[in-house]
Image (tube, rainbow, N blue to C red; front, top):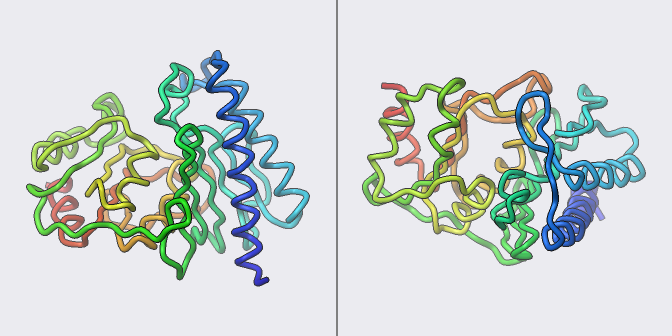
Length: 264
């Protein structure tokens, strides 16, 4: 087994833990508290991340970890695991199944493994550098679209563009597509990789654990993913780095069109 195969196997182990704990808590219901930045957190977020960290430290004590709930360690190393135990905590805490867990491994700041785990649906989208993206172990592919007018676009709700991202870019882009869906979060990126959604747009001020897992997934499905300036996404300098918006597309033609509209 190569190192990459071993890393992928452990990433699946982390996703299995997330699925088990999240499904149990989703059925039972989970109360949430607000963190200092106003975002919600549940005990399940913390329990899943803690369990993931235990596995990573046991298997790869030399690897770094960047997580949403328990801080970061050894971010200057060659390999850093980036984990978001519950992406979409608001949905999870209010009984909506549109949440997931995001797991990524970065090598020299570049995401080389990404998993979008959707516990309630028992679905898993996996991207590995140099390999086709899979959805429940079957290869998937983004679909081609020549113009934005042909596209289905997934966007964050308008409230996510108030402070940190140019609201003008959001307001210029959303009318250009055939039709839109809102608030899909990580589920939308899995749908883009499967060819059901054509673009995904998220506002700025996102941390690496919000987007690193998407990079291998979208790239391996033949799509593109960048910030709003067209620059690549990754771990970069560490937790202080914020993405300047996230744009993912299934076709380079519509990606370029969207970037031009955002920048106008």
